[in-house]
Structure formats: structure tokens, C-alpha cells
Image 1: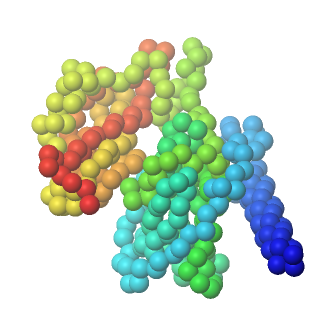
Image 2: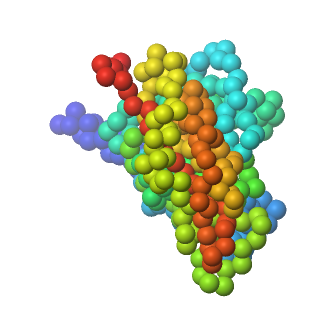
Length: 326
């Protein structure tokens, strides 16, 4: 009887501890949400454009779900070289793979890289800062199409750290083109939905008749969409004729879809070609090269006036017959 009582006491203690940990986690998430909202409401810190700042009341967060708070094992990769991580502009961010975090989420096992900034690691405030960008199946639907970020810190003891996806936030460039944001590497793609953290609703330019078009406007939605000469089939023929599967990608058996973003200018020419979401350095570069070969498009229009339009083109690199992924 004493043994049974002791077991029940232990179970009760464990349950109480778990409940206490969950409450602390929820408090930390709420504090994160409040701090993020305060930052965006502060004119000196906010990335919001002037016309959006006055309307901002707070971020649209998914409901908090503690199941998306995971304890991840960190395996440090010693001596990895720094590399130029692509951003949404011509700037590059100097990063290195600090290590890999292994965890289970939604019934799936993941092992993803975390990055360390060469610039930030020399500062006192961010010497232990780790950058964890990721994409998931909610991108472009409920969350920002370019993925989201989570800030981590190098553990002071041991090799485990907590990754709380409830604290996933959007990069600044989701709200303004004034910012240069690292593009999430292909290695950080997650093939599940992560319905926690900050939601995102794409801001679209108005296409009402009284719309005033300025020289600096680049549109995502227009009345008349840009069109490649000869249509979609002609565009696909151009890609098939000119695209070469990079040898390095073939050797590594890399396949997938590269999303290339570019602007169709008022005169139909192509500018600002960049990878929005890639699969490897070689494939991304090849996709950008092929896009740069395109002839002038028939430009997009609003109110009968030619306008520059931002366009995203998916280019598939398919595995060759006989490939078997390791």
C-alpha cells in the first residue's frame, strides 16, 4: 500500500511539474508577442511603411500550441567556413553553419542547420546568437511566402536547446522592400505545416480606377498580367532548350523546384532576377541564368498604363531516370 501511495505521489509531482513548465512556456510566448507588437508600433523600430504604420494594431498570431515547442539536440560542426547567404536584395549575409538541430515535430524527424553570423558573433549582445530560418507548408497560404525566422541562443550547458515555433516571426522584407533579408536555404525546408507563430496576409496594391501609379511602384496584382511572347508554351520551350542540369547537382542527386522572382518592367524587359526559394547554389544560379535569357514580355497594365510587375516563376529540376535517393 505504501508503494502504491509513493507511485501516485510521484505521478502527481510529475504532472504538477509539467503543468508548471507549460504555464511558463505560455507566459514566455505571450511576452514575445507583446514585445514584437511594441516593436512594430514604435516608429523608430518598426519596419512598416508609413501608410501601414497608422493602421497597425498588432500581429495576427496563430493560437498558441505547446506541441510546437520542441527540445532539440544541437550537434556543433566545428570549423565550418563562412559563406555568402543570399538575401532579397543584391546584398549577401556572411554566415556559417554552426551546427544541426535534431528534433521530432508532428510525427516527423528533422535535422536542420542553424547559422551563425560573422558580424553578430563579434558583438557582446549577440555573441551566442543563432539564426534558424525555415519554410513549411503554410507558406504562401497562411504565412509569408518566403518563410519565417526563429532566434536561438547557444546553450550555456549541454547540447540541447528549445525551439519554440510559437515564436516564429516574419522577416522585415515581408512588410517593406526597403529591407534586405536572408533567403531561407533549401536545407531548411520542412515538409509539414507549422500553424503557430505569426500569420501573414499579403498586402496587394489597389487596382481601382482612381489608382495613381508612381515611378517607384512595383505591382504584384494588376488588371492585365504580363505575358511572354508566344505564351506559356513558348516560355517552357525556352527553359527546356537552354537549361542545363548542373553537374554538381546531378552528382549529389539534388532535385526540386527553384522559385525565381523577377520584375517585368514597363517596356517588357526583365530586371531584378533573384531566387526566392532555391534547392542548391548550382541549381539556383542556373535557374536565374535561364530567366535572364528571356525576351521582352508584353508588360502588365493598370488603367491602360504599362506598369512594372513582380513575377515568380517555378523552374523544376527533376531527378534523372534510375536515381535512387540515399
